[in-house]
Length: 185
Image 1: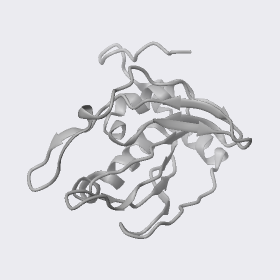
Image 2: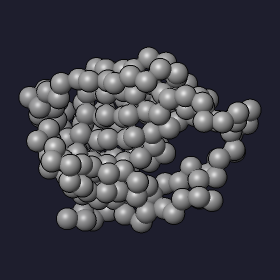
Image 3: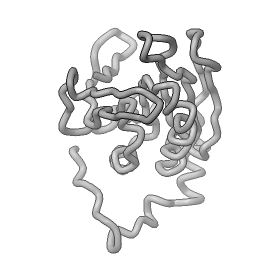
Image 4: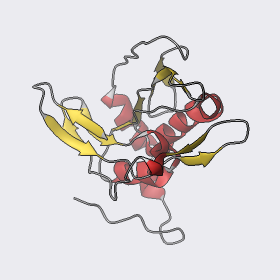
């Protein structure tokens, strides 16, 4: 569950992960999230906050660009993904997925990342990261063992400039490709 809490300590929104991590990776972990977690069945609209409109995702949701694109279509300026990528998948995919979602949606991507060893068979990759709408990593925590915090300014003037100069959301060819899902607003 991804919970958004305001500065007064009240729960503003919550999101239940819709894409469960059921995988059996060669020379890596076999994880069946569906054995212990019930999937959600919808995304939640971006939440207006003092720092911008925030879209909520969780970990494996990051691998599904249509979810990020729908959050952007609904007005998200910042996409958030608290995550616990495995070391194997993190080393191969973590940064490229975060940068891809930022570029595709022209949004900031903020990804908290669990670190450390959970058991003999499971360790998390770490490397919390913030990526700007141009795809540049603007903050990152190093390593897989130490707790740390990544902080970066959100530059809304740059976000708007990027969206104006390269209006990819206006150029999408829904006459050729699938229509986006209807907004849940």
